Amino acid sequence: MQNPLLQQIDAIAKEKGVETEVIIGAVQDAIEAAARKRYKNETLRARFNTETGQIELCAVKRIVADVTDAANQISLTEAQQLYGDEAEVDMEIEFPRPTEDLGRIAAQTAKQVIFQKVREAERENVYAEYSNRVGEVVSGVVKRFENGDIIMELGRIEAQLPRKEQSRAENYAVGDRVRAVIRGVNRSAKGPQIVLSRTDPALLIKLFEQEVPEIYDGTVVIRGAVRESGDRAKVAVYSRERDVDPVGACVGMKGTRVQSIIRELRGEKIDIVEWSEDPVVFVTNAISPAKVQRVSIVDDAEKVMEVIVEDKQLSLAIGKKGQNVRLAAKLTGWKIDIKSEEEKRREVEKQFGDLEIGGAEGESPAATDDAGAEVQAATDDAGAEAQAGTAASAEVLEATDEAGAEAQGATAAIAEALEPHDAEPAPAEAEDVTRS
Image 1 (cartoon, rainbow, N blue to C red):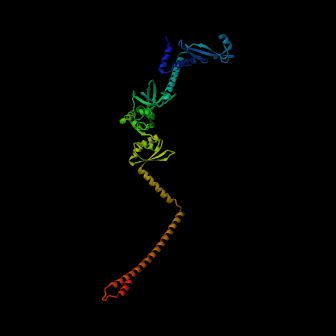
Image 2 (image 1 turned 60 degrees about the vertical axis):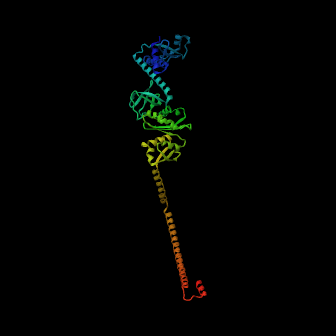
């Protein structure tokens, strides 16, 4: 029949999920710690006998030539009297000590040491098991609330969902089943070691992997995801096959796939955009659902981009309290400056106005005087030319008047020659008149 102590050790090992050797080692350390209160100056060693199920306690003494510490040393002569000629210097000899008279305080000390050792071993096992599972989605049951934090049960292990990792759109009660992503595992923290999160973008990515087969098998790749938990999220997807629409695959037939994720996130809106190597195209897609008129890169080194939208689309592009453009900037990695067409037009007009004013203000007084002198000289020359032109015009008019007078005289002569007379003139006279 198995010893009762061994039975207790096996039960504790199964309950805590630790090895039996760890419990035995904890018991040995506990007996040593308890015995130090009874045998203060001796070097003690406890040993658990697995055959009998008994704990053996011994005082260890080292064989030396000259004894300086009687509690921990024994002379070579005395050792040879006890163990014969086999005893040599620097060998250790164990002297049994009784454990029955350790007392109640020693037993309480042993109990505390056992609990501490078992707890440390349990925490090491939890760390070893979950440290490689960071980023994985787990399901747990709400057990209790502590100062706003939620303590959840993951099987036999407790996990913590801090208040800052909870979505403000969610409320839970004891017994609710919740899915969350493992944010981290603490080795030395008091209380639950596993820290969960409902706000981490990794939760969104894992939910898409579970709901969309194309993402699970690698046909569609999630290039990035950003969230403001409870309000809005943006996911950038890319298809490795030309015939597969990445956005359509994530949305699903009549939105069934994305609606399942939205229900899990308690109504959080999700924008699924297509990823592109071209930053201009990527930013244009990320501003969705707003329509972009044009995009220009302001500073490539600092990753600054200017986006122009219609006046009616400006509020949609910015989003509630700047949420849409803020998420788009996080998703793309570019600083985005959104402007309406009217705002951009006023900005350009102001720049041209500043350039004209700056050009006029930038001339020196000497240059202004020179320019005035040149203008005055040009004006004088133009006046002189105008006067000369006026004189020439007068001469032309005078010549025109003279020519007109001569023409009038010739006309009168012709008219007089054509008037009828009583006697016809001789042909010679008529010819002379005509020539004149």
